[in-house]
Each structure stands twice: as C-alpha cells, then as structure tokens.
Image (cartoon, rainbow, N blue to C red):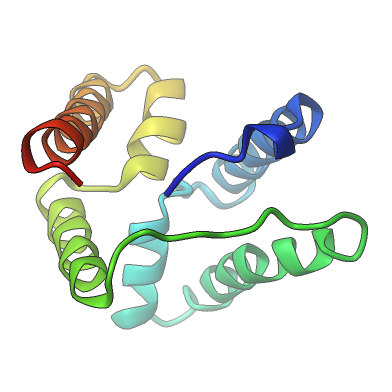
Length: 144
C-alpha cells in the first residue's frame, strides 16, 4: 500500500483525528466504555443482554461515515499490493494479537494512551515496533 501524497490534506486529517477523539471521549463519558474496535466487535460475537444496541450503532458509524463523507468529497483511491492469502494471514495475526494484547491499536493507542495507561503504552510501543520491523523485513530482507 502506498500513500498518495498529492491527495493528502492536513485539514481533513486533523478533522478526522478530532472526530475520533471526540467519539472516544463521548463513548467513555456517556457509556463508560473504551472505543476499542476489537472489544466492541468481539462483544457483538458474544452478545450480552442490553449491550448490543450501542455496539451496533458504533460499528454502523464506522461503515456509514465514509459513505456520508463521499457525498461531499472524493474518497482516496485504495490500492492494496498484497494477494488474498497474505491478507487472510495478516488478518488472522491481527485478530490473534488483539486477543493476546488485551486490545487493539484503537483501544490502546487512542484511548489507553490518553488515559496514561502503562499497559497501553507498552502495547502501543509493541504495535509500532512490530510494524516497523515488518516493513523493514518485507522491503529490505525479503525484497517485496
């Protein structure tokens, strides 16, 4: 995947980050829940009485937000330079890692760091280090 720098606009990036922060803040203030996607979706797979509606609304917002944005602006082109088997393995590794890491990048990186959680600091450092190492190995060792 490559970044189309000619399509990067700082305003939309700033606005998107602010909206993510606002949504995470609203969820914790009004619902007492952390906006970690793996935990929210995981709760839908093992539903608890009275706990499904807000989870469905959150996931619907994730799906509908880009569709709504596309009414006002062109969405960036998506180009994935990996085959289906690699994407499946990567998805399974991410899912497994979120279970072992007690959360995902959104839960730890956005919500945990803002709450000054030491566990989230370590988890986010591990996510980032693993990402850096993976890119280095794929680009410079394997030659992808």
